[in-house]
Amino acid sequence: MEEIDFKNKKVLIVGLGLMGSAYAASFRNIGFETIYALDRNNEVLKKAESEKLIDKGYQNASDILPSCDLVVVCLYLHDALDFIKKNMNNFKSNSVITDIVGLKRKMVENLDGILRDDVDFIPGHPMAGREKNKEGFTSAKIFEGKNYILTPTDKNKPENLDMMRSLISKMGFGRLIETDPDTHDEKIAFTSQLCHIIAASMVDISEDSKVTQFEGGSFQDMTRIAMINSDMWAELFIANKDKLVDTLDEFTESISYFRKCIEDENFDHIKSRFDFIGKKREEMGK
Amino acid sequence: MEEIDFKNKKVLIVGLGLMGSAYAASFRNIGFETIYALDRNNEVLKKAESEKLIDKGYQNASDILPSCDLVVVCLYLHDALDFIKKNMNNFKSNSVITDIVGLKRKMVENLDGILRDDVDFIPGHPMAGREKNKEGFTSAKIFEGKNYILTPTDKNKPENLDMMRSLISKMGFGRLIETDPDTHDEKIAFTSQLCHIIAASMVDISEDSKVTQFEGGSFQDMTRIAMINSDMWAELFIANKDKLVDTLDEFTESISYFRKCIEDENFDHIKSRFDFIGKKREEMGK
Image 1 (spheres, each protein chain N blue to C red):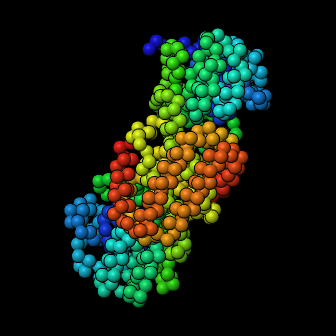
Image 2: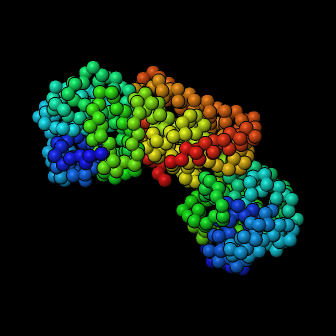
Image 3: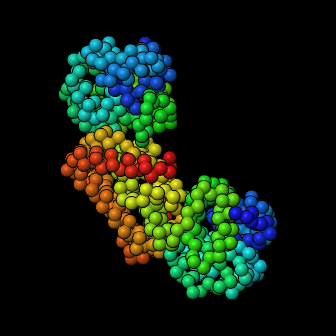
């Protein structure tokens, strides 16, 4: 693959939150010379400018969007859709738009027929983040070794896809998967959304705030992600409800199987299911 | 607390498996001069002798039990009970017996009325281990910073309890909790047994052996403990079935609440429950 000149690409990050600021930091590391950000919070923009995280901050999309080659939309699902739809006439010709939304069918379906022919929207999902918000900007380190999923459409230009692949690799992600939006959403229901609901339910049923005194590590690992951004996740759960409800049903069915075996004191069934599952998990690897 | 002379105590470890070998290594670090082990596998004993993990290995309890001051029974629940019952006449007068079984009601109830007045059984549960077995002996490091739960009975002598507390601290455990067997078993149903069943059910319902490509870390954390010792855990689940079935029911009820909210697209209910749970988890600390 030809070396891509990121230096002279003007990039705009839309939304300078947890993910947006990590993108900015990462782009700075890679060597982008012009990093702009759009955010409704002017204080955040000023702080980012003063820390040299970005070169200039904007509050109005129309002031900067027409001059940007790459636009990374770091907003929640519906905000991301609204932003792209509302600003369809502001994008620079031949620019590339990408997003970070954790569901891909809604993004692709809702923009189908709306996208201009001369802008290329490449839907993406960097599987990175942090379970808890804190003050200040995020480091590019959150991307290191993580999975990045792209769900390209048949309209994406090969050279723009290559640019995204190169960028993702330079950002430090460990693995790039390319799949269709439906497969993405189905897998995410399981590997991500189910995990968050399980963690929440575990904390939900705990009556003892000192219960961690009675744990060997598993409880910590499993409930770490119970502290989440409730606005973002509630939106994602609902947007993926068909797949997520099925996944929750399969999961509770499996739990019910164990419950029945335990109630019946069926040692052999518990043992053989755990033996089978242990092998299965081992084969999954990392 | 007076410094306790561990050096001259003769200690016997019953069962030189994952936990037993870590106990031996830890006792060696502390400075016990005489560490014996009992195991049905002579090769394991010879290997432990050659590696100086123990001073001498035995296959018959009656050959060594009468001369030991401290006996640590590192066997599964029913094996531990059988061992103590069967050897009741072999224990040295004024010796201390302790165990590592992950359930305490069964241990205490089954030995009540059977224990000799001149031996002191102090039931314990070191909340340490490893999700997977591997070759060789275990290091004492598995205990570092972990929780240890003691469920003393009213028959335990204060000086023996002090000895156990001192020992647990010297072994490197981070926190010692003392409670009654019923409370222990109730908490364990939640912090440990529920976690293992959830992890197993998650792997159970996965149809894709490459699903880890689609994860951001949560899935790994949450299914790590799906690879377990099925014999030991099946026994523990059944022995704690009253508490565990209740816990599983509460858990699936909470999952059902989220399922219903998602199906109904009730954003506000999902958000407010997650906000509540996030705060609750934060207050729990580590």
